[in-house]
Image (cartoon, rainbow, N blue to C red; front, side, top):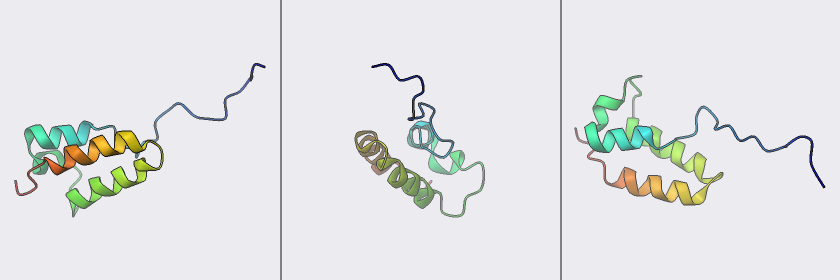
Length: 74
């Protein structure tokens, strides 16, 4: 049976963390990546990872490990 339409979107939602922000925070410093001036950048990213966990728990676990390695004091 061939489905003519796919009910599952393959595009990533705009708010879904792709890992780039977390990676750049880890390599270049957390404060430098908060270009939008979000009041609590660490909690903002952790919230996005929690949201993404509903879609892909394995990727969220990887992102959580990456967030744990970030020095948030800089």
